[in-house]
Amino acid sequence: MRRLILSGLGVLSVCGLFAQHTSISDTIMLDEVTSYAAVKKYQAGAKLESISNEQLQFSQEGGLDHVLMRFTPIYIKSNAGGLSTIRIRGTAPDHTSINFGGININSLTLGHSNMSSIPTYLFDGLSLQYGSSSAVNGSGSIGGSIYLGMNGNWTDGLKVKATVSQGSFGEQLYGTKIFTGNGKFEAVTRAYYYFKENNFPFQNIYTGDIENRNPIDDTQHGASVENMGIVQELNYRFHQNEYLKSAIWLEHNWNQIQPNMQSNIDYTTTEDLDNKHVRAWVQYRNDKNELRYLASLGYVHDKQVYNKDNSQQIGTDRLIADLELKQDFNSNFGYRGGIKYKYIVPEVYAYSSENIDFEQQLDVFASSFFTAWNKLKLTINLRQMFVTDFSAPFTPSLGAEYRLYTNDVSVFKLNGNISRSYRIPTFNDRYWGTQGNPNLKPEEGTNYELGLDYTFCNDNFQSNLKLNAFYMDIKNWIEWRNFGVWQAQNLMEVVSKGIEFQSNTTITKGAIEYNLRANYNYNPVEAVETNSQTGVTGQQLIYVPKHMANAFLMMKYKEWQIYADGSYTGSRFSDDIGYELDSYFLTNCGFVRQLKINKHQFRLSLSINNLLDVNYQNERYYAMPGRNFRVSISTNLNII
Image 1 (cartoon, one colour):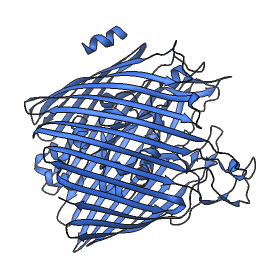
Image 2 (spheres, rainbow, N blue to C red; image 1 turned 45 degrees about the vertical axis):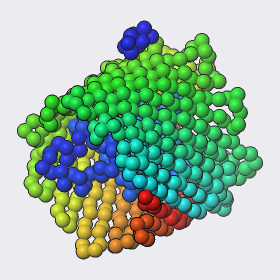
Image 3 (tube, rainbow, N blue to C red; image 1 turned 90 degrees about the vertical axis):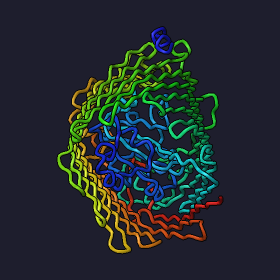
Image 4 (cartoon, rainbow, N blue to C red; image 1 turned 120 degrees about the vertical axis):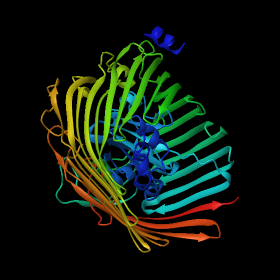
């Protein structure tokens, strides 16, 4: 297999698909995220959404978990400390890829990312893909994908943005973004520091081995979080359609491991996790000719140390090379193809060098789109992965979008997508001490998607409504269970199905503008077959709510913004025995004041989170903060 790999080395948005409706799509679609159109072009029928920079500013403190829980129908399992894991459409955390340039930043040992440690402040927006995207993004994209967006500004002059935020329970954020360039060369520096003491009061209902119906007043201990990082971009434009872009992301995340409610009563010691990451990506792109191409190189170093014990280091190094060719024969037909190579060296104290020294991975992929009668768009994606000493499945996807109706102010579309997906077991799954299982099979899924998309736009009223139904069947689901010893096994076949509704409406009345966003998700997920005596079939998977909903309402009047949002999370099983965590409803509100002094802009904001002071658990036995406040000031200085 190694010889085979070594020899192998030697989205349009709606506006792109229906050109006459550019104004409608540009108004509704949040096109600030530069990755959105590129992702959409070859994935007709797939459900993709964007979260704009404006939305990110309402949750720029902390990580992606806060943004996703407030503005999307995606469930995040989290405690108040430093751990948050994503579950798109009921799948596991390692079933969602998090993409920065051409890098999936998920840990190669654990298989997923800590959503609370990915700072929203660094990015200009997010693109989200719901459902399988392995044919485009490779291993791990079973439940969905997230694309971290940074705009190409090509700054001419010097611009400085800065933010200072202070909140309850010792929360602090300091951030800056510096843009400098001459229109051809650009240097962008993005840096931030975030800290939270997390010493919040709460009602402790666990004062013994069982739930106590007479809660006591308690204060959370040992849950501090400290994150800091910098992204440095250096970009050069040789020609309008030829440029070199590079970014290096240095990150240091530290957090104490939050004690559960029972341990918090007699709290004496603390444990912590220290994570350091280096992520670098360089890309050359040439679109001057009909045959366009891009070449990229990347490097990632991840290192985790538990409780300051350097003898228990967990880390990996990986080199990434990517080559892609594409050609559009006309606006109705085009293709692309390429390869991506990864060379990975794990540095994990629990791995034996006899089992794993290094691993090579090679992805070969091809995509094409075809548009007919200015109504129908078809896309196909093909991907085959080759892995050292492992067999990965062939992964195709087929998508379609059909414009049912259109006029000068509206577009009504029918979308459909069928896709295969897979996930190669993590290094921990295969090689962790004597418990790793090198005989694991890859998880394989099939995703079916059907959706309706309606967009309406006139001078005073703009709205986009989406209704999607999905069915996902995942075989060889991997779980760690105790079979006399903890070990990873291919235990289950899981079926996830459901309905998602999303809306985004803007109404203008004179000088006042209203924006209303609403989401609802109904998602039954259960194991339909299990190979384990301890597995449970016919029951909703743990930490997956059947019902989720949220809404966001904002009013703008001149330089003022007033907003309120609420989110409902349904009950969730916390174990296979059937214990259910109660559902909960959280509300937030706040206001923003925009100021302009000469050519400089300032943004003042006050927010109140968990306005109703709800006492809830997102993970069993772990406390969450009640009502809390935050004050922020941001500047946008155009110096030259």
